Image 1 (cartoon, helix red, strand yellow):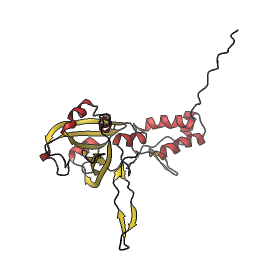
Image 2 (cartoon, one colour):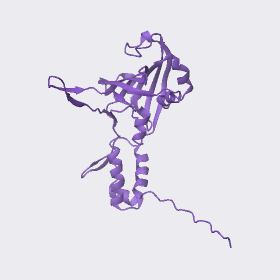
Image 3 (spheres, helix red, strand yellow):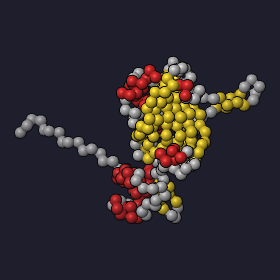
Image 4 (tube, helix red, strand yellow):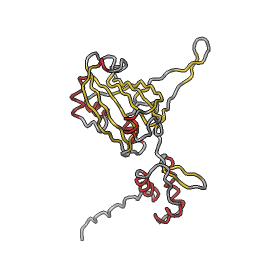
Length: 261
């Protein structure tokens, strides 16, 4: 008989049953149209062989994620999570992953253009050429926005060597460039014919047009971007503080959005 006994294998703790149900339903909801009604709670509880209390925990999770809307007396209906742009510097990829969505991009264009053909707001420090990248950004394979971004021409090789159907900010970070500040302007616009087709919207549907200027720690502009987001999936959140000036009047301090440390 061995002097030492083999240790009994440690059993891994199983996740709560409602989380398993949440995961299954989440995957199913991604392929269902907005407004589709879920099966009644009783049927879902029988399907997963759980109590209605356990099932409701799963539905609570999905409702908190913005994936379903529950209407008293009518049932639960499929919806899509609304993504909020907050007061911290985060990328599209980070925003999607934080909300349990799978981000991806479809490259629509990559070209080197004369900066004189671009808006005067684009990369003000650049006087010759810029790199223009256009992408369709998706979450769970659903179109979310069309992004046109400009970069200094010296970043061309770095950008070409990276995977532009993933995070451009990750490419920059891997190349030693950290974006630390952001100026943002948002306005409402009507989606044009091409944008409506790419975003899966009716022509002329409302969209959020977001202008972003990203800078590095030295204050140099690294990226200028104009994105048009689906207004039904996005909202903008900000934070301001009220201060008093020398006259005793109330004023609002403008806050630049900065990257979390």
